[in-house]
Amino acid sequence: MSAADLASMPAATPPPGVIANFDNPPSNAYVLIIVTTICMVLLYMTMTISLYAKINIRKKMALDDWTRLIATFGTTIYYIASVIAVTKGKFGIHMYDLTAADAMCTSFIISGFFTNWLTALVWPFAKSSFFLMYLEMFRTVRWQRYANYIGLFVTWGFYTAVLVATLSFTSPAPGETWQESLTSARYAKMEAWIMPIASINLVIDVYILVLPIFPILGLRLSTKKKLGVLAVFATGLLACVASSLSIYFKMVLDWHYTDYSYYTTPVLIMCLVEMCVGVTASAMPSMALFFRHKGGKVTRVFSRFTRSSQSRSSQNMNAKRVESAGDSVDSDQWPLKDVSSSKNGHYDGTDDNNYLNSVQTFIQAATPTSQVDRDGAICLQYAFNQGYEQRGKSDPANQV
Image 1 (cartoon, rainbow, N blue to C red):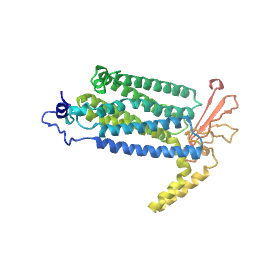
Image 2 (image 1 turned 135 degrees about the vertical axis):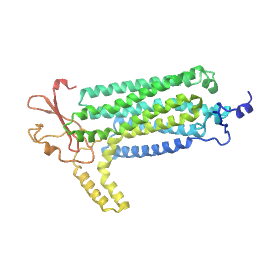
Image 3 (image 1 turned 120 degrees about the vertical axis):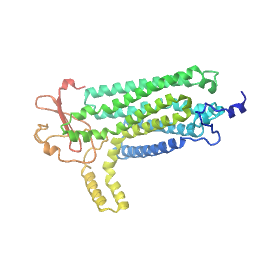
Image 4 (image 1 turned 45 degrees about the vertical axis):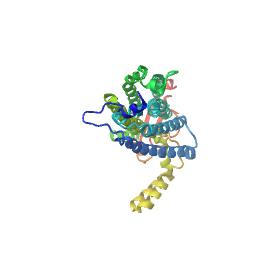
């Protein structure tokens, strides 16, 4: 078939009553560009604040900071690949509005190739940031350490297998062109793995969301206050929602696979949204550290624009709060913090009012320590900076 014939033939059969539009076809590419650009701007703002807090306030970079930084870089690459896919590759346009030459051009095929496997490079770093953060936060809880090690092992094992399988299925074989690879039976096998991969991805997201809940439920708090503490971790719920929506749109894509150039766009959008939300959620401790130290200045800047007496009052309260907390050890590894009771160095449950009367809007932690109680057991004492506490005894033999 000649090039002229390919340029005049639609890549797919139009639905009944629809005429192929090669000259000015409708496209949903603008939706991807707008939504993902907003998400990327928010991601960069979050990462800037996070890095500032780590470098200028905490003056120390942890391992989860590096995985988060790598995930941000990978998300940027995926964003660029997605934008190229809808601009140069012509994704977002119905297949019947593309010519056969458009569907077989190198830019169209390579765009699909890169958006297929780049996610398998980003996800392990993004999800590892949570596990590494939990290891620091709950390192005195033995089962939590094991749960996080299992999460790291499963995450890296799964996404490594996905990366290898995707590249083997979609890469051209030696001596094979991109066009021949696209139409091969090997490439078609990848379609059967789309839903299983998306489902396992959601399972890992839910695992990350649920993991910190059980230690929080052990806090000596009312149900209302426990829900307030859990809300701090609820930002990860947005990643689960994005992952669920990604599964839905992948199901829609599977139902309309003959028009995959159009129905791939929502899948790309949700992948990028999930990446941005996931990286942002793992940076919340650093955000808390930043606003703890700079909250007064931020409020003063805000008050200059609003000229509101209420804003000025909030500024003074925040400034005093930051100043009063200046003597404590700075850390973004919230929510746990060591405290000491004034009663013989351990908590006896009789002084709750003194412990629970200083509600603050930020969360702070210091490196956990332990005290030997009267009966020889180890008394682990932790408290939320809002005044929330968790105190309990554990046998030294169970400590690792």
